[in-house]
Length: 520
Image 1 (cartoon, rainbow, N blue to C red):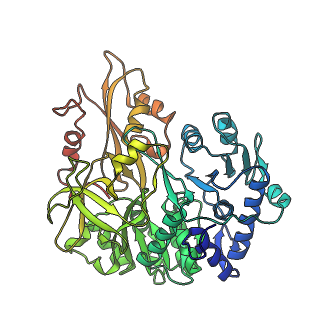
Image 2: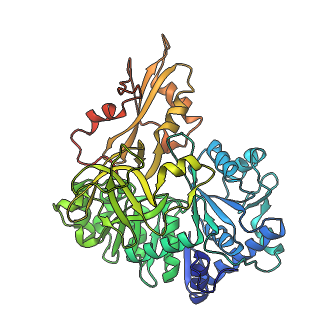
Image 3: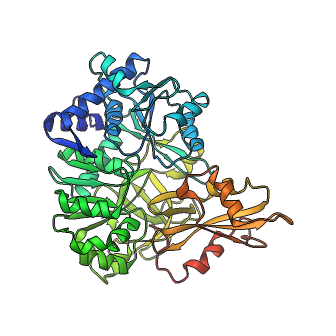
């Protein structure tokens, strides 16, 4: 039995929902639920899962677009002691199948639009209980039916070490890795989000990015402050500006591509943005020129964050006061957050965690109370990433005397396009399935709108009549749209390092030589 003073995400959210029971929690398409209503609904779904055989510690897949019932699924996991496996709605059936199977998920809450996909992939998973928000298929139980049949609510007291979140990230193997976050770790991350992102009591927050991604961590954190979320199914700059103009929105989270769309929209000049006091951005670089435009449009509202799935969102912070047009630190990702230790270490020796002197380039290492417990069933990857208590980020950076961190390159070769992580080995594996491809290297190249664009360098096999459209068609069978290459070039050979590995640095250099910063 956990101590009465144990810190858990379950405890933080339970107290928030009880304290703010009458406050509005979230509004989607004009429908609003209160904290009390959502907490009750999550408790009934937890009971429905338990009645159908799920036990504390079982994994539950959350497979849906942004909607109110995302909170039903999240709260069911919090109340029932289940571990949530959040999956964004841009994944392919192949990707959904892998994550559900690898996680060992026994339960799932699926949104409309994905029920047929889930029914098709179920035989390859361990799923035993499937609940559909609408349009059930196969063995899925309609959500309302499950809630009506539930025997009250179900609560399982959580221990700080219990698994709560199992999101998936990519890696050098080309397969996503499950990242295990405990109740205590998530609780600490929630408190870090609240303090570092200036989330105030009753904050009016607008979310347009996927809740299974960073937005979900921010939203869960803001529950502590009794915030109200306006959530859209996706991002449209005109809709965004209309909501800012008509609703009391005071806080929002955007990726730079979305900021550019807003700045370029005709309605901006006529929109009252005076109530928007905080604009948090991250997940991709933002150009100094566009940032200056943003400062002119929104004032001193910007906060930049840098983090990883392995240490959710809050690693470094560039606060509002540091967003000064033309200042050197605007090119940085800020300084260490309050609960974070940072250092730059030797990137060539994974066992060496000693700090390098200020100004020297090396691998960025971080540690905090909310670093992942480990990778799910990947002990070797865990040992490579968690060294002496430090998280090796795979990002190359330098830190100046004042503590500002400047990201320079990405040792892991990940591309961040429009705020979404794209792992080059995964794209390479998909393109390599084309019989006319002898070799392929995928890199990120600068793009004014997307921050980075996925670019494929392909060596044709023999006399193969290979076309860019043919390569894209093959990739499209296996990858989500945002992972598809935006450009393809054909070459006779791909350069290699002295050790015989593809030299992606040489491939990137012509594109990035005039850029100050290669990663977010």
